[in-house]
Image 1 (spheres, rainbow, N blue to C red):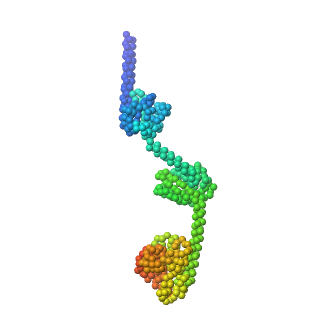
Image 2 (image 1 turned 180 degrees about the vertical axis):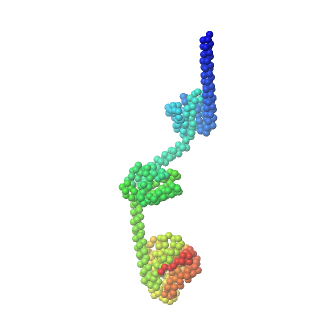
Image 3 (image 1 turned 90 degrees about the vertical axis):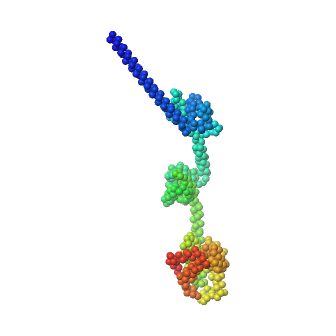
Length: 480
Protein backbone atom coordinates (compact mmCIF):
# COMPACT_ATOMS: atom_id res chain seq x y z
CA UNK A 1 0.00 0.00 0.00
CA UNK A 2 2.85 2.33 0.91
CA UNK A 3 4.63 1.48 -2.33
CA UNK A 4 1.60 2.29 -4.41
CA UNK A 5 1.19 5.61 -2.65
CA UNK A 6 4.86 6.39 -3.25
CA UNK A 7 4.54 5.59 -6.96
CA UNK A 8 1.44 7.75 -7.19
CA UNK A 9 3.25 10.67 -5.57
CA UNK A 10 6.17 10.27 -7.98
CA UNK A 11 3.80 10.31 -10.96
CA UNK A 12 2.17 13.46 -9.61
CA UNK A 13 5.56 15.13 -9.22
CA UNK A 14 6.56 14.22 -12.80
CA UNK A 15 3.20 15.43 -14.12
CA UNK A 16 3.55 18.73 -12.23
CA UNK A 17 7.10 19.20 -13.54
CA UNK A 18 5.92 18.52 -17.08
CA UNK A 19 3.08 20.98 -16.65
CA UNK A 20 5.50 23.61 -15.32
CA UNK A 21 7.90 23.01 -18.21
CA UNK A 22 5.13 23.35 -20.79
CA UNK A 23 3.85 26.48 -19.08
CA UNK A 24 7.36 27.97 -19.21
CA UNK A 25 7.73 27.08 -22.91
CA UNK A 26 4.36 28.64 -23.61
CA UNK A 27 5.36 31.80 -21.77
CA UNK A 28 8.61 32.03 -23.75
CA UNK A 29 6.70 31.39 -26.97
CA UNK A 30 4.22 34.12 -26.12
CA UNK A 31 7.01 36.52 -25.31
CA UNK A 32 8.74 35.71 -28.60
CA UNK A 33 5.46 36.24 -30.39
CA UNK A 34 4.99 39.61 -28.69
CA UNK A 35 8.56 40.68 -29.51
CA UNK A 36 8.12 39.56 -33.10
CA UNK A 37 4.87 41.46 -33.33
CA UNK A 38 6.50 44.58 -31.92
CA UNK A 39 9.45 44.16 -34.28
CA UNK A 40 7.08 43.83 -37.22
CA UNK A 41 5.17 46.89 -36.06
CA UNK A 42 8.41 48.87 -35.83
CA UNK A 43 9.45 47.69 -39.28
CA UNK A 44 6.01 48.57 -40.64
CA UNK A 45 6.20 52.10 -39.21
CA UNK A 46 9.73 52.57 -40.52
CA UNK A 47 8.73 51.10 -43.86
CA UNK A 48 5.73 53.36 -44.33
CA UNK A 49 7.37 56.58 -43.15
CA UNK A 50 10.81 56.17 -44.73
CA UNK A 51 11.75 59.03 -47.11
CA UNK A 52 13.43 56.60 -49.51
CA UNK A 53 11.49 54.17 -51.65
CA UNK A 54 11.20 50.73 -50.01
CA UNK A 55 9.93 47.45 -51.41
CA UNK A 56 9.23 44.06 -49.81
CA UNK A 57 9.92 41.24 -52.30
CA UNK A 58 9.35 37.53 -52.47
CA UNK A 59 12.85 36.14 -53.17
CA UNK A 60 11.45 33.11 -55.01
CA UNK A 61 9.12 34.82 -57.50
CA UNK A 62 10.66 38.35 -57.30
CA UNK A 63 7.08 39.62 -56.91
CA UNK A 64 6.65 42.85 -54.98
CA UNK A 65 4.74 42.06 -51.78
CA UNK A 66 4.51 45.62 -50.50
CA UNK A 67 5.73 49.16 -51.21
CA UNK A 68 5.77 52.42 -49.27
CA UNK A 69 4.50 55.84 -50.31
CA UNK A 70 7.99 57.07 -51.23
CA UNK A 71 8.36 54.15 -53.66
CA UNK A 72 4.99 54.89 -55.22
CA UNK A 73 6.00 58.55 -55.64
CA UNK A 74 9.32 57.62 -57.23
CA UNK A 75 8.02 55.00 -59.66
CA UNK A 76 4.79 56.80 -60.52
CA UNK A 77 2.60 53.74 -59.81
CA UNK A 78 0.27 53.41 -56.83
CA UNK A 79 1.15 51.00 -54.04
CA UNK A 80 -1.51 48.58 -55.30
CA UNK A 81 -0.13 48.80 -58.84
CA UNK A 82 3.39 48.12 -57.59
CA UNK A 83 2.11 45.03 -55.71
CA UNK A 84 1.02 43.67 -59.08
CA UNK A 85 4.56 43.85 -60.47
CA UNK A 86 7.84 42.02 -59.97
CA UNK A 87 11.41 43.29 -59.64
CA UNK A 88 12.11 41.82 -63.05
CA UNK A 89 9.50 44.10 -64.62
CA UNK A 90 11.03 47.34 -63.30
CA UNK A 91 14.74 46.37 -63.29
CA UNK A 92 16.69 46.45 -66.54
CA UNK A 93 18.68 43.37 -65.52
CA UNK A 94 18.75 39.89 -66.94
CA UNK A 95 16.88 37.32 -64.76
CA UNK A 96 20.13 35.47 -64.03
CA UNK A 97 21.89 38.60 -62.77
CA UNK A 98 18.89 39.58 -60.67
CA UNK A 99 18.67 36.14 -59.06
CA UNK A 100 22.40 36.22 -58.27
CA UNK A 101 21.89 39.47 -56.36
CA UNK A 102 18.94 37.96 -54.48
CA UNK A 103 20.92 34.81 -53.62
CA UNK A 104 23.80 36.99 -52.45
CA UNK A 105 21.43 38.77 -50.07
CA UNK A 106 19.88 35.55 -48.76
CA UNK A 107 23.27 33.98 -48.20
CA UNK A 108 24.72 36.89 -46.25
CA UNK A 109 24.08 38.24 -42.80
CA UNK A 110 24.93 41.78 -43.94
CA UNK A 111 23.38 44.19 -46.37
CA UNK A 112 23.87 43.73 -50.10
CA UNK A 113 24.24 46.67 -52.47
CA UNK A 114 24.11 46.91 -56.25
CA UNK A 115 23.40 49.50 -58.94
CA UNK A 116 20.83 49.06 -61.67
CA UNK A 117 18.72 50.97 -64.15
CA UNK A 118 14.98 50.93 -63.37
CA UNK A 119 11.97 51.83 -65.46
CA UNK A 120 9.22 54.11 -64.12
CA UNK A 121 5.55 54.48 -64.99
CA UNK A 122 6.20 57.32 -67.46
CA UNK A 123 8.73 55.19 -69.34
CA UNK A 124 11.74 57.11 -68.09
CA UNK A 125 14.78 55.19 -66.92
CA UNK A 126 16.68 56.15 -63.77
CA UNK A 127 19.96 54.96 -62.29
CA UNK A 128 19.34 53.66 -58.78
CA UNK A 129 21.38 52.15 -56.00
CA UNK A 130 19.57 49.23 -54.29
CA UNK A 131 20.29 48.13 -50.72
CA UNK A 132 18.78 44.70 -49.96
CA UNK A 133 18.51 42.66 -46.77
CA UNK A 134 16.51 39.64 -45.62
CA UNK A 135 13.62 39.88 -43.21
CA UNK A 136 11.21 37.32 -41.77
CA UNK A 137 7.55 38.30 -41.71
CA UNK A 138 4.85 35.90 -40.48
CA UNK A 139 7.40 33.10 -40.56
CA UNK A 140 8.34 33.68 -44.19
CA UNK A 141 11.77 34.81 -45.40
CA UNK A 142 11.42 37.92 -47.55
CA UNK A 143 13.66 40.64 -48.93
CA UNK A 144 13.30 44.34 -48.39
CA UNK A 145 14.97 46.78 -50.74
CA UNK A 146 15.78 50.48 -50.19
CA UNK A 147 15.93 52.46 -53.43
CA UNK A 148 18.15 55.56 -53.88
CA UNK A 149 17.97 57.58 -57.10
CA UNK A 150 21.57 58.23 -58.19
CA UNK A 151 20.87 59.45 -61.74
CA UNK A 152 22.31 62.94 -61.17
CA UNK A 153 25.31 61.51 -59.36
CA UNK A 154 25.97 59.10 -62.23
CA UNK A 155 25.71 61.94 -64.72
CA UNK A 156 28.23 63.97 -62.73
CA UNK A 157 30.54 60.95 -62.48
CA UNK A 158 30.27 60.33 -66.20
CA UNK A 159 30.93 64.01 -66.90
CA UNK A 160 34.00 63.90 -64.65
CA UNK A 161 35.23 60.74 -66.33
CA UNK A 162 34.77 62.35 -69.74
CA UNK A 163 36.54 65.50 -68.56
CA UNK A 164 39.42 63.46 -67.21
CA UNK A 165 39.67 61.51 -70.45
CA UNK A 166 39.73 64.74 -72.44
CA UNK A 167 42.26 66.28 -70.04
CA UNK A 168 44.57 63.29 -70.33
CA UNK A 169 44.15 63.20 -74.09
CA UNK A 170 45.11 66.86 -74.41
CA UNK A 171 47.87 66.62 -71.80
CA UNK A 172 49.48 63.69 -73.59
CA UNK A 173 49.49 65.45 -76.96
CA UNK A 174 50.95 68.88 -76.18
CA UNK A 175 54.65 69.62 -75.85
CA UNK A 176 54.35 71.48 -72.53
CA UNK A 177 54.38 69.69 -69.18
CA UNK A 178 51.03 69.44 -67.44
CA UNK A 179 51.00 68.31 -63.84
CA UNK A 180 48.50 68.10 -60.99
CA UNK A 181 49.24 68.32 -57.27
CA UNK A 182 47.34 67.77 -54.06
CA UNK A 183 47.04 70.59 -51.46
CA UNK A 184 50.46 69.66 -50.06
CA UNK A 185 52.08 70.21 -53.45
CA UNK A 186 52.70 66.50 -54.06
CA UNK A 187 52.45 65.62 -57.75
CA UNK A 188 49.59 63.23 -58.53
CA UNK A 189 49.83 63.43 -62.33
CA UNK A 190 52.53 64.41 -64.82
CA UNK A 191 52.15 64.37 -68.60
CA UNK A 192 54.59 62.47 -70.87
CA UNK A 193 56.26 65.74 -71.92
CA UNK A 194 57.98 65.81 -68.53
CA UNK A 195 60.43 63.16 -69.78
CA UNK A 196 61.14 65.04 -73.01
CA UNK A 197 61.88 68.31 -71.20
CA UNK A 198 63.43 67.20 -67.90
CA UNK A 199 64.58 63.63 -68.45
CA UNK A 200 62.40 62.37 -65.57
CA UNK A 201 59.73 59.81 -66.36
CA UNK A 202 56.22 60.65 -65.15
CA UNK A 203 56.31 57.97 -62.44
CA UNK A 204 59.60 59.41 -61.16
CA UNK A 205 57.90 62.75 -60.62
CA UNK A 206 54.61 61.57 -59.14
CA UNK A 207 54.61 61.28 -55.38
CA UNK A 208 57.23 64.03 -55.07
CA UNK A 209 56.63 67.63 -54.09
CA UNK A 210 56.75 70.02 -57.00
CA UNK A 211 59.36 72.28 -55.40
CA UNK A 212 61.87 69.40 -55.24
CA UNK A 213 62.60 69.99 -58.93
CA UNK A 214 63.25 73.74 -58.63
CA UNK A 215 66.67 75.37 -58.51
CA UNK A 216 67.66 75.91 -54.87
CA UNK A 217 67.56 79.71 -55.08
CA UNK A 218 63.94 79.66 -56.35
CA UNK A 219 62.44 77.33 -53.72
CA UNK A 220 61.64 79.95 -51.07
CA UNK A 221 60.00 82.24 -53.63
CA UNK A 222 57.99 79.31 -55.01
CA UNK A 223 56.69 78.28 -51.59
CA UNK A 224 55.59 81.84 -50.86
CA UNK A 225 53.89 82.17 -54.27
CA UNK A 226 52.03 78.86 -53.99
CA UNK A 227 50.85 79.51 -50.43
CA UNK A 228 49.51 82.88 -51.49
CA UNK A 229 47.85 81.30 -54.54
CA UNK A 230 46.12 78.63 -52.43
CA UNK A 231 44.73 81.39 -50.19
CA UNK A 232 43.51 83.72 -52.93
CA UNK A 233 42.68 81.05 -55.56
CA UNK A 234 43.91 83.48 -58.22
CA UNK A 235 45.47 81.94 -61.31
CA UNK A 236 49.00 83.16 -61.90
CA UNK A 237 51.94 82.99 -64.29
CA UNK A 238 55.38 82.66 -62.75
CA UNK A 239 58.93 82.06 -63.93
CA UNK A 240 61.25 79.59 -62.22
CA UNK A 241 64.46 77.69 -62.89
CA UNK A 242 64.11 73.90 -62.91
CA UNK A 243 66.58 71.07 -62.49
CA UNK A 244 66.76 68.39 -65.16
CA UNK A 245 67.62 64.80 -64.33
CA UNK A 246 71.17 65.35 -65.56
CA UNK A 247 71.55 68.29 -63.13
CA UNK A 248 71.36 71.06 -65.72
CA UNK A 249 69.05 74.05 -65.24
CA UNK A 250 66.41 75.37 -67.61
CA UNK A 251 64.12 78.40 -67.44
CA UNK A 252 60.40 77.73 -67.44
CA UNK A 253 57.17 79.68 -67.44
CA UNK A 254 54.61 78.19 -65.08
CA UNK A 255 50.88 78.82 -65.45
CA UNK A 256 49.05 77.80 -62.27
CA UNK A 257 45.34 77.27 -61.68
CA UNK A 258 44.36 76.72 -58.05
CA UNK A 259 41.42 74.69 -56.73
CA UNK A 260 39.68 74.86 -53.35
CA UNK A 261 41.36 72.34 -51.02
CA UNK A 262 42.59 70.36 -54.05
CA UNK A 263 46.02 71.77 -54.86
CA UNK A 264 46.61 73.09 -58.35
CA UNK A 265 47.08 72.27 -62.02
CA UNK A 266 50.23 73.62 -63.62
CA UNK A 267 51.51 73.99 -67.16
CA UNK A 268 55.26 74.29 -67.62
CA UNK A 269 56.72 75.73 -70.80
CA UNK A 270 60.47 75.67 -71.45
CA UNK A 271 61.48 79.28 -72.12
CA UNK A 272 65.25 78.85 -72.02
CA UNK A 273 65.62 79.97 -75.64
CA UNK A 274 63.25 82.87 -75.06
CA UNK A 275 65.21 84.00 -72.00
CA UNK A 276 68.42 83.84 -74.00
CA UNK A 277 66.81 85.91 -76.76
CA UNK A 278 65.50 88.40 -74.18
CA UNK A 279 68.97 88.73 -72.66
CA UNK A 280 70.45 89.30 -76.08
CA UNK A 281 67.79 91.90 -76.81
CA UNK A 282 68.31 93.59 -73.43
CA UNK A 283 72.06 93.65 -74.05
CA UNK A 284 71.41 95.25 -77.44
CA UNK A 285 69.06 97.79 -75.90
CA UNK A 286 71.61 98.59 -73.20
CA UNK A 287 74.24 99.06 -75.89
CA UNK A 288 71.85 101.22 -77.89
CA UNK A 289 71.03 103.24 -74.77
CA UNK A 290 74.72 103.81 -74.08
CA UNK A 291 75.19 104.88 -77.69
CA UNK A 292 72.22 107.24 -77.48
CA UNK A 293 73.51 108.69 -74.20
CA UNK A 294 76.91 109.19 -75.71
CA UNK A 295 75.45 110.82 -78.81
CA UNK A 296 73.27 113.19 -76.81
CA UNK A 297 76.14 114.15 -74.52
CA UNK A 298 78.28 114.82 -77.59
CA UNK A 299 75.54 117.05 -79.03
CA UNK A 300 75.28 118.88 -75.69
CA UNK A 301 79.04 119.50 -75.77
CA UNK A 302 78.71 120.94 -79.27
CA UNK A 303 75.98 123.33 -78.08
CA UNK A 304 78.09 124.34 -75.06
CA UNK A 305 81.07 125.01 -77.32
CA UNK A 306 78.93 127.16 -79.60
CA UNK A 307 77.46 129.14 -76.70
CA UNK A 308 80.02 129.01 -73.87
CA UNK A 309 78.22 131.69 -71.86
CA UNK A 310 75.32 129.30 -71.17
CA UNK A 311 77.44 126.14 -70.85
CA UNK A 312 75.77 123.66 -68.53
CA UNK A 313 72.28 125.10 -69.11
CA UNK A 314 71.07 122.05 -71.05
CA UNK A 315 72.46 119.60 -68.45
CA UNK A 316 70.89 121.56 -65.59
CA UNK A 317 67.51 121.79 -67.35
CA UNK A 318 67.58 118.03 -67.89
CA UNK A 319 68.23 117.34 -64.20
CA UNK A 320 65.51 119.76 -63.06
CA UNK A 321 63.00 118.30 -65.52
CA UNK A 322 63.69 114.73 -64.39
CA UNK A 323 63.35 115.76 -60.72
CA UNK A 324 60.00 117.41 -61.45
CA UNK A 325 58.82 114.26 -63.25
CA UNK A 326 59.80 112.10 -60.23
CA UNK A 327 57.85 114.42 -57.93
CA UNK A 328 54.85 113.91 -60.24
CA UNK A 329 55.20 110.12 -59.85
CA UNK A 330 56.58 109.27 -63.28
CA UNK A 331 58.38 105.98 -63.83
CA UNK A 332 62.15 106.18 -63.41
CA UNK A 333 62.79 105.24 -67.04
CA UNK A 334 60.69 108.18 -68.26
CA UNK A 335 62.48 110.49 -65.83
CA UNK A 336 65.87 109.43 -67.16
CA UNK A 337 64.70 109.90 -70.75
CA UNK A 338 63.53 113.40 -69.89
CA UNK A 339 66.95 114.19 -68.41
CA UNK A 340 68.58 113.14 -71.69
CA UNK A 341 66.15 115.25 -73.71
CA UNK A 342 67.10 118.22 -71.56
CA UNK A 343 70.70 117.72 -72.67
CA UNK A 344 69.80 118.57 -76.28
CA UNK A 345 66.69 120.73 -75.96
CA UNK A 346 68.60 123.77 -77.27
CA UNK A 347 70.46 121.95 -80.07
CA UNK A 348 68.85 124.33 -82.56
CA UNK A 349 71.01 127.16 -81.19
CA UNK A 350 73.96 125.86 -83.24
CA UNK A 351 72.19 127.46 -86.21
CA UNK A 352 72.19 130.86 -84.44
CA UNK A 353 75.32 133.01 -84.86
CA UNK A 354 77.47 132.94 -81.74
CA UNK A 355 77.67 136.76 -81.60
CA UNK A 356 73.90 136.93 -81.14
CA UNK A 357 73.90 134.28 -78.42
CA UNK A 358 76.75 136.00 -76.55
CA UNK A 359 75.52 139.57 -77.03
CA UNK A 360 75.78 141.48 -73.76
CA UNK A 361 73.02 143.96 -74.52
CA UNK A 362 69.35 143.54 -75.23
CA UNK A 363 68.54 141.76 -78.50
CA UNK A 364 66.80 143.63 -81.29
CA UNK A 365 63.37 142.34 -82.41
CA UNK A 366 64.96 140.81 -85.50
CA UNK A 367 67.67 139.12 -83.42
CA UNK A 368 65.10 137.85 -80.92
CA UNK A 369 62.95 136.41 -83.74
CA UNK A 370 66.09 134.74 -85.06
CA UNK A 371 66.83 133.20 -81.65
CA UNK A 372 63.25 131.91 -81.42
CA UNK A 373 63.86 129.74 -84.47
CA UNK A 374 66.11 127.46 -82.42
CA UNK A 375 63.15 125.27 -81.35
CA UNK A 376 62.18 124.51 -84.94
CA UNK A 377 65.82 124.22 -86.01
CA UNK A 378 66.38 121.62 -83.28
CA UNK A 379 63.33 119.70 -84.49
CA UNK A 380 64.64 119.70 -88.07
CA UNK A 381 68.04 118.43 -86.93
CA UNK A 382 66.67 115.43 -84.99
CA UNK A 383 63.35 114.62 -86.68
CA UNK A 384 64.77 111.95 -88.99
CA UNK A 385 66.65 110.12 -86.24
CA UNK A 386 64.70 107.30 -84.58
CA UNK A 387 64.72 107.46 -80.79
CA UNK A 388 62.68 105.44 -78.27
CA UNK A 389 60.94 108.71 -77.30
CA UNK A 390 59.76 111.64 -79.50
CA UNK A 391 62.77 113.87 -78.75
CA UNK A 392 62.37 116.07 -81.83
CA UNK A 393 58.70 116.78 -81.06
CA UNK A 394 59.45 117.66 -77.41
CA UNK A 395 62.26 120.01 -78.47
CA UNK A 396 59.88 121.70 -80.93
CA UNK A 397 57.30 122.31 -78.19
CA UNK A 398 59.40 123.32 -75.16
CA UNK A 399 58.69 127.05 -75.70
CA UNK A 400 54.92 126.60 -76.22
CA UNK A 401 52.66 127.95 -73.46
CA UNK A 402 49.33 126.82 -72.00
CA UNK A 403 47.46 129.92 -73.25
CA UNK A 404 48.85 129.63 -76.77
CA UNK A 405 51.23 132.62 -76.44
CA UNK A 406 54.36 130.50 -76.97
CA UNK A 407 56.25 129.60 -80.11
CA UNK A 408 56.78 128.36 -82.77
CA UNK A 409 53.20 127.17 -83.39
CA UNK A 410 51.14 128.79 -80.65
CA UNK A 411 49.88 125.49 -79.27
CA UNK A 412 47.56 125.48 -76.23
CA UNK A 413 47.16 123.25 -73.19
CA UNK A 414 47.10 119.54 -73.90
CA UNK A 415 48.07 120.11 -77.53
CA UNK A 416 51.66 119.70 -76.35
CA UNK A 417 53.29 116.59 -74.89
CA UNK A 418 53.58 116.26 -71.06
CA UNK A 419 57.39 116.15 -71.41
CA UNK A 420 57.29 119.49 -73.27
CA UNK A 421 55.28 121.12 -70.46
CA UNK A 422 57.76 119.90 -67.81
CA UNK A 423 60.73 121.01 -69.89
CA UNK A 424 59.18 124.49 -70.31
CA UNK A 425 59.07 125.06 -66.54
CA UNK A 426 62.53 123.59 -65.96
CA UNK A 427 63.96 125.81 -68.75
CA UNK A 428 62.51 129.03 -67.29
CA UNK A 429 63.56 128.15 -63.73
CA UNK A 430 67.17 127.43 -64.75
CA UNK A 431 67.44 130.43 -67.09
CA UNK A 432 66.10 132.97 -64.58
CA UNK A 433 68.25 131.58 -61.79
CA UNK A 434 71.47 131.68 -63.84
CA UNK A 435 73.79 134.46 -65.02
CA UNK A 436 73.49 135.62 -68.62
CA UNK A 437 75.74 137.95 -70.69
CA UNK A 438 73.00 140.58 -70.76
CA UNK A 439 71.98 140.33 -67.05
CA UNK A 440 72.88 138.96 -63.67
CA UNK A 441 71.08 136.00 -62.04
CA UNK A 442 67.59 136.87 -60.83
CA UNK A 443 67.72 134.11 -58.20
CA UNK A 444 65.57 131.08 -57.54
CA UNK A 445 63.02 133.01 -55.46
CA UNK A 446 62.25 135.39 -58.32
CA UNK A 447 62.06 132.45 -60.75
CA UNK A 448 59.68 130.50 -58.51
CA UNK A 449 57.52 133.60 -57.98
CA UNK A 450 57.24 134.15 -61.74
CA UNK A 451 56.37 130.50 -62.37
CA UNK A 452 53.73 130.54 -59.61
CA UNK A 453 52.21 133.76 -61.01
CA UNK A 454 51.85 132.13 -64.41
CA UNK A 455 50.40 128.87 -63.02
CA UNK A 456 47.63 127.72 -65.36
CA UNK A 457 48.31 130.66 -67.72
CA UNK A 458 51.70 129.96 -69.24
CA UNK A 459 52.60 126.82 -67.35
CA UNK A 460 50.88 123.51 -66.59
CA UNK A 461 49.32 123.58 -63.09
CA UNK A 462 50.47 120.06 -62.15
CA UNK A 463 54.05 120.83 -63.18
CA UNK A 464 54.06 124.12 -61.27
CA UNK A 465 52.66 122.45 -58.14
CA UNK A 466 55.39 119.81 -58.31
CA UNK A 467 58.28 122.33 -58.48
CA UNK A 468 56.70 124.50 -55.78
CA UNK A 469 56.48 121.48 -53.47
CA UNK A 470 60.07 120.52 -54.25
CA UNK A 471 61.45 124.00 -53.51
CA UNK A 472 59.27 125.01 -50.57
CA UNK A 473 58.61 121.71 -48.82
CA UNK A 474 61.65 119.66 -49.74
CA UNK A 475 64.15 122.56 -49.91
CA UNK A 476 65.18 121.61 -53.44
CA UNK A 477 68.54 123.01 -54.62
CA UNK A 478 69.24 123.71 -58.26
CA UNK A 479 72.01 121.61 -59.83
CA UNK A 480 75.41 123.19 -60.26
